[in-house]
Length: 199
Image (spheres, rainbow, N blue to C red):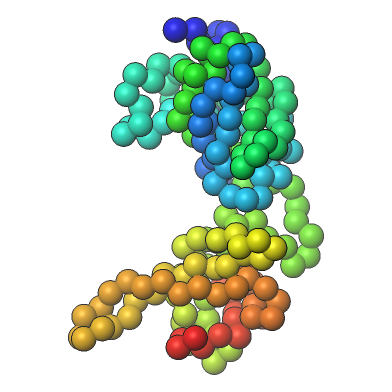
């Protein structure tokens, strides 16, 4: 099995503010390109970055993985959109075997490296974990995910509700559009929405 050229991957600590943005799905072509499965429909951060932090696949997917251990940094020679994801050429990964050896690898970038967003726009990672309240101050839930639905996104909230005397976790969805979202306060970790519990 061919591995990336020694020195192409540099052992580095994972930054404290690292965000997992995707994973390597498979080899693409015969010249060492890899296919990336991004975790978000917004791939601008991955495309804009000239280097990525990589970690081995999660333990349940790591059987036989031997390309590297721990966290490594790698320079990105080229990255471009392709069908429902991205394809990338990483320095030192020069043939299909080397690319196949990276299957399942997780890709991270420090949050501090993300380009600034225009006023009123947010990265999905900044919204995860925020508490959502309505205008009356009623807690609607905590943002667990952002679901792209064509031109808009939908906040997926997790909340607890009581059914027949038993507490259980439930989901609530709110379109992430100005008509329903009054305010996003990242400092207070709070979103205010024009929404009712029974919608």
